[in-house]
Length: 188
Ligand SMILES: [Zn+2]
Image 1 (cartoon, rainbow, N blue to C red):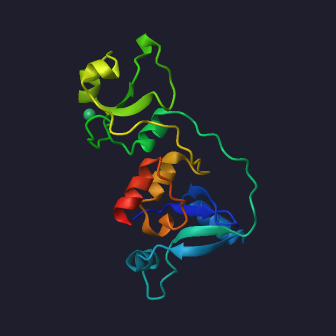
Image 2 (image 1 turned 90 degrees about the vertical axis):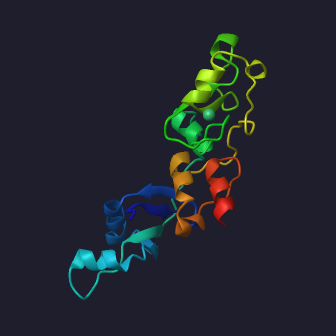
């Protein structure tokens, strides 16, 4: 069971994912209300060890006040590329944790570190493509890579993992440029 808690702004914008301890502090200070709990009653009984079970652990909180934040930057990183591509090799479609980053136009040929030149790639495909240009490699991309248009307040990785949680999903805007949105479509 996950003890991660989704924190929403007062206008329901997802702000953060925090741990249970931080969530309890927010509640204790009266700064937030519980919208959803983990409905794992067994766990709640386990915690108290007696009949009068504590309410189960919060899963989604909403702040009582509005946090004003500028729109965050979307940082280009290995992790955010893997998240955008849903940990899936963009050549052969294998989903694995053992991924590397492929420069579609190789560095040697002037290919840069941009959202549209970097894709998640398994080691096998990376070996196969090597330093070749895409049109000389005999390989095909499963979709053209783009900079995600939707920039969540929470990190792209947390956003995409969050879309796998049925309760959280209702609060996470659907966005089709990132891997999580594909999961959403597949399971909705
Ligand atoms: Zn591959």
